[in-house]
Length: 173
Image (cartoon, rainbow, N blue to C red; front, side, top):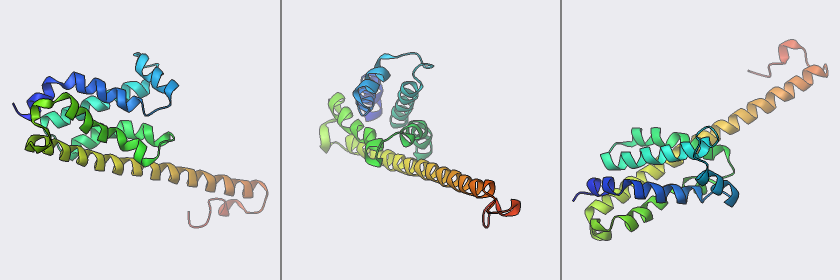
């Protein structure tokens, strides 16, 4: 049986375990809420996380490329980028998938099997894409914060009468 068929057969078990591990990276009270609240309107983070993880598993099963993985990773990493996660913690949930697959899919023959090595390599590619997305999101956040600070600074100078209307947009902006 190929790795794709084996993964497809165990998809729901793997997804459940992966969701548990991912949600457990949050503080205990948050993790408990994310696991227990099933209403997508009351728990958009949990719903988005679950959907993204499922799409990522589908990418592994069907052998989709980086573009599809990036589309699946983007929502969950946008959420994690605005939270207090370090880059390593924000992307660690991807590496936990290796352990989960090794636990649930014993039919692949362990580390010596080329199928499991190919899956591990695909998960590594997923992690690299996740890190790129996370860093891009954090850069955008810092850019927005810098622009807001600059606007507040020039607005303050304008209100204080220290600059005139034409200079209020800032130098070179």
